[in-house]
Length: 182
Image 1 (spheres, rainbow, N blue to C red):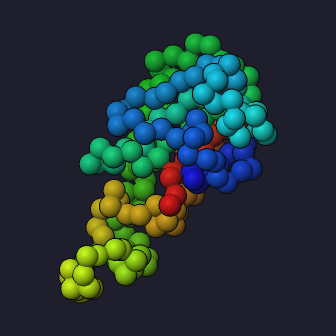
Image 2: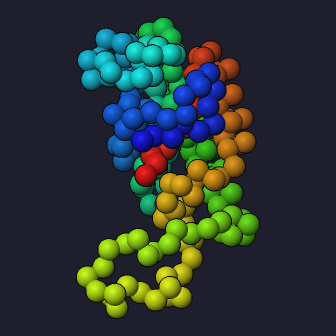
């Protein structure tokens, strides 16, 4: 399931992994679909067939320093749009990088690392002695190694500011950050 965070113009909080909002391409390029309603791949997407009935999609990947995609910055419109320029793409990519920089800045604070780390007890092992002792597991210290439920606890206030700026800049009614959730 995709969690929609820092949302503007959309009331749904989740979308299926089959949604257009999922972007798993490990490259720093956006995906632009000028008329998503005409794309049969997304004929069942709740963002397309249900409110808000989106017809235009542009998404830039949220990429970590280890080049892993952890989510997508999405802007959408209720009307098809032609002519989304290279300058528009550049602005979207820059905004995605700013959101990641903001997440890294929050993750660098000592208060962030006081958040609970998931238990290792649920992991399968071939024998009870093969699991590392709890004291040797250590603390997660990089954003890309964080489980998505911990990333969800990041403060999205600054991401929301970026989202509002995109809505104004592109004059589009919908924008959000989509991140996979277990």
